[in-house]
Image (cartoon, rainbow, N blue to C red; front, side, top):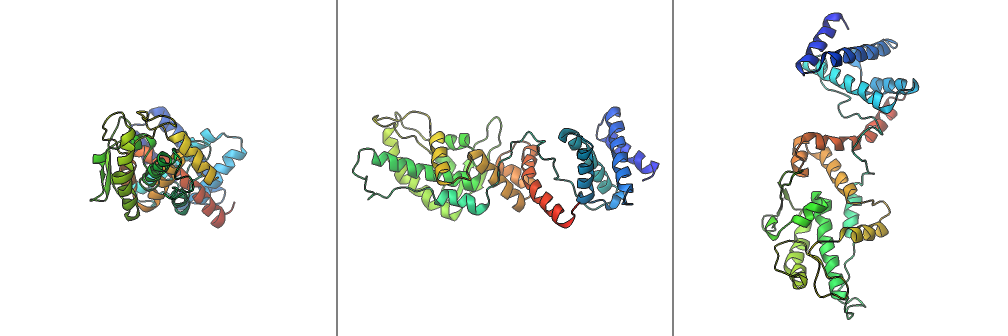
Length: 314
């Protein structure tokens, strides 16, 4: 790489508003990467994820921390975007590459689609003719289970958060249109999502049957979609939907791979990113900023690492 090209890269960084100090450091880091590539006579325009990962491994062997290596990776990413802009390469091979253990986004083991579906299908609602059907507590217990199953369907298919579930109203569930509307908040945008065909019947049964029964336990008429059940021995329910701790425990007992509902949402968004573009997923997830959506791309890093290890072993 000649001095003219490096000068163009500096101009590219300055156009992005980088400070003089940052430009100096970025240039030095790029030159260090180029020096590493020279060992194998690899041209920068032909560098792939294999070479970048080898470089990061080289830095790790020198004792550099994850945070320091992540800075170097970010510089290389910037440089490859510069190359794309100047027509020197068609794509950025490290666009979504992340340093493991160097992200503020808490990572969860991602559940595959079949596993997510099993969380729903394996959650059992007792039959009306259950052996306990004559006991005083049975009806409210069964109604709670039916409500929880409806809740699970929206979390597993539409990736709703627990606060969003609690805020849903009757007006938000549009069964005839096959859609659900999620209101915006201080930290999320409103959106309208499609319901899956196999959800609609279960949600309809909840809204017109189970919810009508649960409404008898409420202290006042309410338009909230999901209603609480009374604590044993009481005739009226609490105002808040205090189901999450109990529901989490129930699902953990039936599925050892389940951690919490944040894991479910992370899994849903990760699968969306494989099917839709980033802006579509940002809308579907209700993220105010695209960088919030980009954080979930790190969940695909392990797959990328496996591919690189398989086809380009060090």
